[in-house]
Image 1: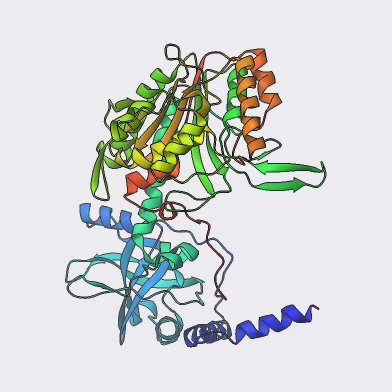
Image 2 (image 1 turned 120 degrees about the vertical axis):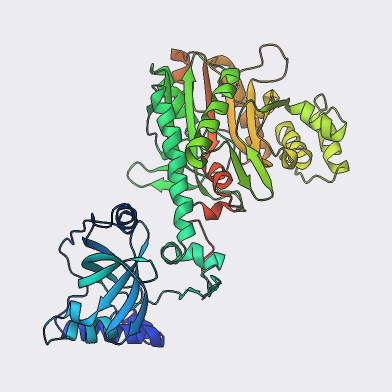
Length: 515
């Protein structure tokens, strides 16, 4: 026996607060009465709270006997009769407990002892009963029998609503909500609605892509070479192979190998990981939708994305418009288009497209833009754009035609020297999507990778590494292709009116709790 662990267990027991001690005593009493607080067998339900209300209001004689299950959220004891509220997976409904209905014989233990004294807020119960309407017109369930399905030994926050509808003691502390997501979802109905809407967004997009005949695929999360984006990876080690592996920063290079394999279009909702800073729009683990379509270019992709997001908004919101903080975002196309250097010139009055790296360093210094010695022209241009342009792009806007140095996986522009066929979609001052006419020339792609390696030598930890497997695929021959990555978490923020990415991720990364 590990004595240290044993001792820690004892110490933990001593930390129970009074409510937790009471609940554990109730647990012991239930067991002593022969009640199994955690039964294993299936509890067969035949209804849900929402369906009961819908069906009974339509035809009061249609729905009578029901079997439901859920969490006990309130109890109002009034002698021989009591009211309670049950929350199931669909919603909430009022329960009416009458002693003589539950206990028609002389033995009143089920009501007097178990329900009144030993059941607590948060307990999960099953209920058999009949639907009726109270004198005040509330559809309720008259409980004929109940069964404890899971005893809650940790109290829930008690959220109360007064006669005026004002809510008291809300569970709204953001850090606690993120750390105790299960508690948040139980107590705050609005939290579940955010994630249900997130699912609708994913389903809408997935259905649209499937209807086009594109195939959903899976690509490796652990990769021997990280690529497809400029970012710092998380590193681990595979013991059997004795090699380093990286959590993927993007799935782009794998998806393009599948295009080489011959399908018209492929897509993946991918978990990506980047070892970078955290803020309201960045989490180290996030979800990207990436899809690639052969025989298309970035111009086609702009039109497709307009249709995709417009249809998604209608499916999820019932409208193309979404209220986001102080703005109303309209997803109906067509979206505004502006080239990268024109956007900068419009805001600064300066044409910085022809500046050398040294001139860009001096320009950034004169404008108070932070930079360091490892930054090449690409990152310096991006810093200028971020400083002067991003936050002003509220309505959906395509920023197009990025310089070659910023786009190592992109085809060179067919008409504009030094630029590429790339766009980024900005909404409410943030990048939502990034798309290219994909580079399919293996010789040019190798040159771009070699330029990236020079940046690594300068100290840029986010530059790309040469991926020879990907280059081998390009040498086989990849058709003209357009691809895009859409940040699904940021998109969900827009559709749910949430200002922090942590609000749309079930379990966001958090600093360890202070002890």
